[in-house]
Length: 404
Ligand code: CS2
Ligand code: MG
Image (cartoon, rainbow, N blue to C red; front, side, top):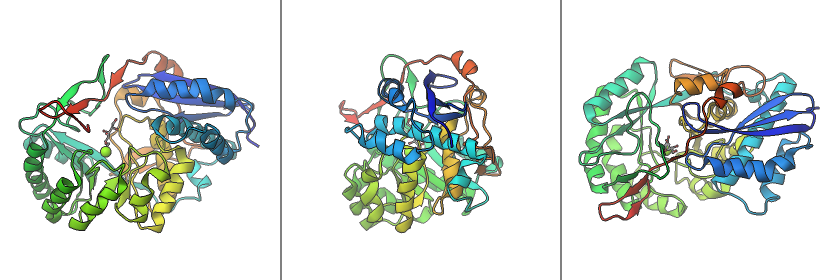
């Protein structure tokens, strides 16, 4: 028996960047951790948890993970969406963490055990121009990564999605209002095929190359870009077009065989069901924290397995190491898991979240500590208070808002 949930704390802090972390403690003193971070809307999830979920958790049987999931999902009446599903996701992660600790087992063992020895990682390489990008790719390959997402600056655009300064890339800017960025699809489409061709020419055929279009194209433009990139053997093109209207991907699929990855902004299986059952994608990107936790993301991945769609969960540095740990336990135990996004974290984040997971030679492993194998150093985190930050807003030259 795992005992009853005795306390539940929502911790909002900014060790390196803003994170929302849920801490559950049972009547037997077992601690479970969950990530509840939604970049740019952190306080909404914190309030949803503190005001509406935490009061309902106290006294609940910590063993009953699926019942708690259903209670929070169906019992709220209002369902789906990133805020609700991140709150449920945090509770779910924390309960799996507790169950593993009580059993003395890493969570992947509770999920059926390992189906592989390690989890392939893909990391990010960015460059304001092609020479800088090629240097960044070389640096990642020199560190042993075998799969690299490449994002480039675009001539004529001051800032572009995915291209950051310094060591990492943090898209959210601190301040009272979002930064606004100019976007020009034509400039992008005229530039990016040549950049990706130069990267492929430098790396040779073995390196897995990925590119994130980040919701910027129409289905027609996406189909054209896919066709233009056919010869580069990309591992995937990500978020080629906004996919709330999932049937739009049919047009893209009719014109190109470039592998497609979609799903990081989706929060339940119902948001991406047709993408999977019509095989409109090759990789489903739903993320543990944003898709209702381990319990629900596994249901999405198991549906995907039936349609030969691979799991490749979202996992940049703007979801916490608690999410990454949970994602790696799922990754080790999920047959159709393909690759885990992994950017690494800034030093402050690494210090705030001691963890058992490891990365070497381009592969990740969750470790064998009981539970998730990660925790938050609350005292350290408290020294780094939340600072309001927003993801940018993109606009076209005429001022029209564009998907960022
Ligand atoms: C991106 C994300 O990693 C990715 O695939 O789409 O970095 C995304 O831009 C951020 O998570 C937004 O906060
Ligand atoms: Mg993405």
